[in-house]
Image 1 (cartoon, rainbow, N blue to C red):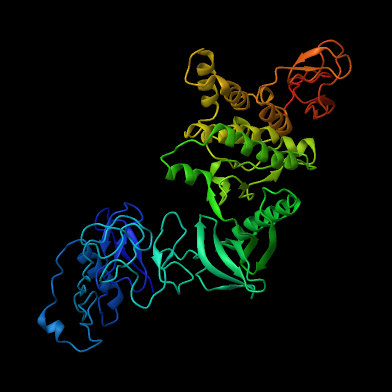
Image 2: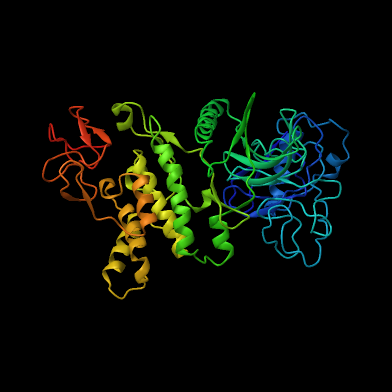
Length: 501
């Protein structure tokens, strides 16, 4: 049974898991580490309470006065009979710490730096072997708890964290659905983990996205996200940039997505490993065109699908160093089938710097993905993460300089990024198709001819300035009167109300 102990530093109560005696723990409140005293061996009716007090006193460095000899000599279970009478007990016995290995500097579990003479990792709590370089003899690789407030390393046979009881990721060797054998963990987050596994029927390597959830109510919510991601992947299976989905497995309080295993690294990790060195503009243009194909396909669904989390982390570069794949469609969703549904606030899912203002307040739309695409291309071209609309203002100031830092042959590229990082959604490109078109032409389109009277109009205008013919075929409904307007309309042509897409 877990017991409570006061932290020597902040004095707050800390739950001590079974078997933690003599081990080093980190206080979840103040983050300071301390060694858990040996479990006191108590005898008598009040043994548990007295033992915990002795542990707490020992942990705080307070000397515990031994009981009188007459009490120590008493028989098991004897007591004075008076209220609050003394009981028989032994003092806490802290076992000696194992000798850490000489020269070890990294935790074998979480790879964090070790303090000199450490017997356990102060970040994940992993107990070091005598040589401090490998897990304890006879044990497999430790399992790191995915709870952000915990992160402790657990023995490989545990299914729940010994510190916080959170459900742990699946250990290597586990069979999923009597078919997929887990080989190793590839990535882990707060909601789940991704593993490399082997399909025992075909011997092919697959990636399995495992949902970790202990709460039954929360599980139902996350399961809906899993099912939605599976539906989206199936709808995009004809697009080469999207990983193929093989199976969705639901087993009790567990769910797994079995997908195509992608050999490669995400673009952010590649840049960080190379001191944030940018990629070439020509290569970025090709990648941008490919991403536009995926976004066009998503945005042309009925209702339109939006990705909501496009960034370098979610783009994988394959081993040929040219081909990319988009990953993590778990945050994607449709914008709603009716105007009422589209006007309602959505779950606020975004990555700071890549998300436009309308997405931050919970009202994303297809052009929100164009903002994220522009931020992603900016990051790949400069090695610096975007800062939302602030980056657009910085680019605008730089483009005003005739002899600035932007090379002349790529001014069009940064102008394209500036436009699509605009704060007002109507100042951005109307579609991913338009975005791709300018990437292919390597210029920013400024004008377009009216299809009816051939009058030249500025791009991204909803109606011709001469004949009022629609200049695009995307309809936006007015929230006030419900009548049709063309995309780019800021005000309804029927009632004058502000149009909100």
